[in-house]
Image (cartoon, rainbow, N blue to C red; front, side, top):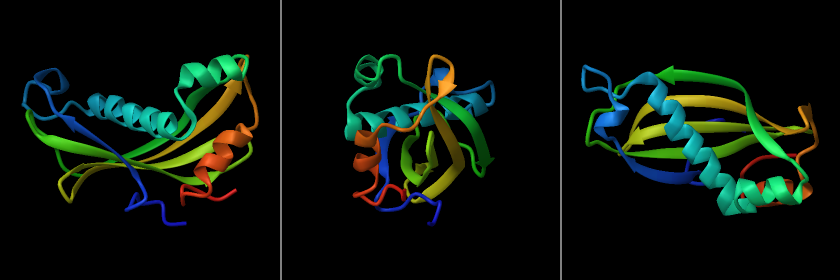
Length: 143
């Protein structure tokens, strides 16, 4: 499956604020991590409810970032309107592979491949079937 987010991606619009930038006026590299975390959270919220509900229903189920690979292509600046595009690229037993992009219009600023693990009590567990079903039929991944 193509790992690049496309038309089927969840989109989260954001504005870049002063707090997101470094002394140069460009977005500080770690700010993109926060932007992408919000994108992942909103994708999951839209498909399976909020993570606190999943935690309660799953008796302690949480999602943790296991691996992340980023490619910084172009900088965003203060006051830019950006969008975080997020979609699943692969579903595995206990992990969800996501492709994310931060864009300014059609311009791709940052690309990321993220592996999120499903964990309970510090141990990896199988992704809940409800989440698996929610991701698969909408072109969000393959089982």
